[in-house]
Length: 82
Image: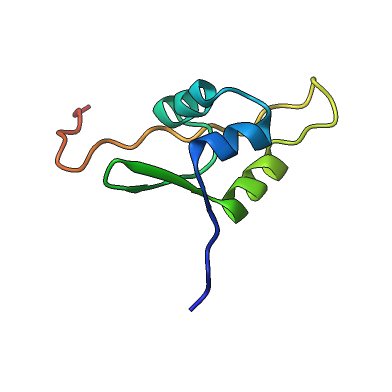
């Protein structure tokens, strides 16, 4: 079985040189690194964080940002109809 290194929000914030609140906002609004929830605990797979950093690396401010992922609806939540 493969071992997966999981990081806390605090560890991710340190690696990104930002606040823990910024990491929380990424979770709430989407567009941040992928995360895993275990009950109330949130963890970030280290390899997924590294891929997210690479995907968001730019050489110029004129380069377009990657497409943000839309937040998924909670299981059982009703979906709007068109």
